Image (cartoon, rainbow, N blue to C red; front, side, top):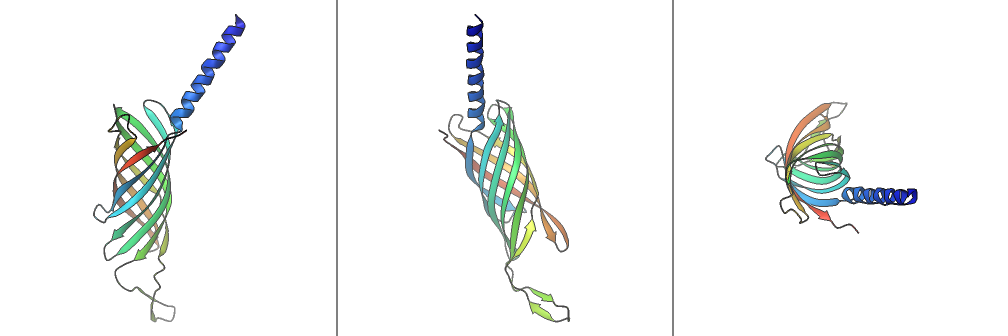
Length: 186
């Protein structure tokens, strides 16, 4: 009798471990429209991996690469890693939020830039761009609209900082609208 009990317990434990690893192995890739300031167009390429998941909650690790084009001002290219959570609100509707850190490189795009050197003369600056630290916070809604199909759409407002900016920091916002496609895992 004890051998049967131990065998059943081991099978149950093994089954639970497999079920938990399957739900957390989901990976997704996607693309989105990214509007810096709500008006300046851009795009992002996204990656997500579920670290933990159940029917009501998902813990996520995400990566993002993108660019935006602020007409006659600057162009920004960025890379970011994020940690996030997704909570089921109703059926396939989720609330999600992410915290991220990243690298933003901005290039002037409105004409030549000049600076004043130490002797007081104006000189033309090179346009290799400027590096910035880019922490971010985003939140929004996602909808697994096709149920069993591997597509999820989302809308995420995002706040991000451009550090340094004129010897301080600049808080900016963006809006991200896109879709994520689940990758098949073997």
